[in-house]
Figure (tube, helix red, strand yellow):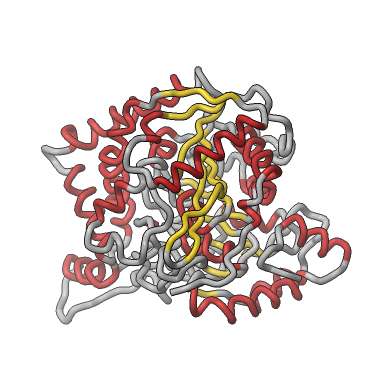
Length: 487
């Protein structure tokens, strides 16, 4: 079997026909990881013996029966490490339970396999903020894979995973999917349970799939979606069959092109690829309409007040007593133990966001910053509501450029924050958004993938997947695989 081009659908067919077993599939995947992970750095760990035990009892008649799914390192898997890419949890925490998304994958027959690298506590857009490993872009090892789900995207793109779960707080599924030339979808807020996802920003976080194509994304979304009483933000709304609309005609569907997302500053190759994709949709029967999202200019500032504020609160549980690695200076009291443990355990980006979040929540600044940011968030959500009165879906770039070189943002974090401008709005408004490959940027080291974003109204994942499947049926960008990565 060729794992570099395999999909969940093709492997499921092979398992059901008896061409190979789930155990053989896992062993082949482990061989790929042994051969390539040292150079790409997508996996933090994997437990082949544990996964083989699960594979023995897998039921191939189930939708994901016997299929291995990689798991981002902030999503709990029973008896497996959950490090969040942080020294704070490295070697110190094996989960005593499954996240709801993990449990639902298992219920659909899947075999969770491996802990995939990420920006520490999901704070970053390059995966360079991981304290535990360096992940590179499989297409060019001198460039980042994106983040924070960079390990998940790099593993799928390189053939070390068939599909994976990621999490998306401000673009962390869609942006690495775009940079690595694979497919990723952020569901509507509340569509997939967050129970068992280590919290970064609770009003923004969502779990979703990163896959080789739209069909595989629909299969995983079928498995993990739905109401969960263990998550107070879970929507009590029946999820549809996300495969039902795949391939269905999109004639007459209106695609909005937000003028703010096509402004100056976009790399010409990205603009060209997205424009070409828009014309492809038009040739398939869709109508293109210009729309406006006027509060886009405030999205970055709004996000980087709300997200750090929530992170500051959520990460207060890491006190050196209840979770993770503890540093105990001689004669230290509890306050000194807490300070020493957090100083040693957290990386610079996590500390930066905790400090920023604590500041905007502090007495005298709460109303000036946090309250005001929440009001602007409402304006951003209303922008989308008005836009969807004119169109069915919104089409835009994922990022202003293809994957940047390693180290590009290390001395200028603000530059990295600004690169998220096209993805943040969907999180702030709680909307579903899909990333699909639509072209390549040529550079001295070879081609780098470019991604297209489709955003829909709340709970319109089926419509997004429908449009994405029709696009992929008429193009071959999603079929391209990295063949010779360079440094």
